[in-house]
Length: 127
Image (cartoon, rainbow, N blue to C red; front, side):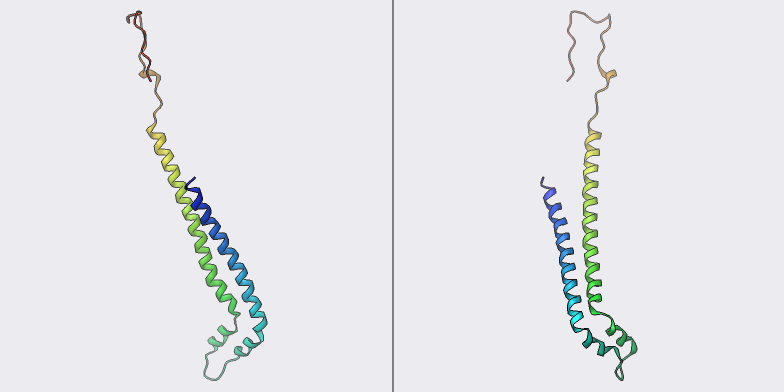
């Protein structure tokens, strides 16, 4: 029970992160939609400014924010998946070790009664 609580909290944190990413991205695109005409003026190069800079400024700025934040979100998701995989691997190793330590008693190790044994003795049970 102690291991499930942190795993649940980590997955919950990932879902919260994704939700905030979506909401903030929608707000950024809304702001961009309101101010897009002002940014269109920067599309044309001013004397002395490189053409590459003007092309960069003509791109929608929410894309840059979404791309960087999206990379961070993917890293968060991968971290959660890797952590889950290592926990499962540890559980499998623990089970494998516990199975290898337990050895089922074999029948041929028991003492068998023959005619040479004394019938008056009661056989001892192995436990």
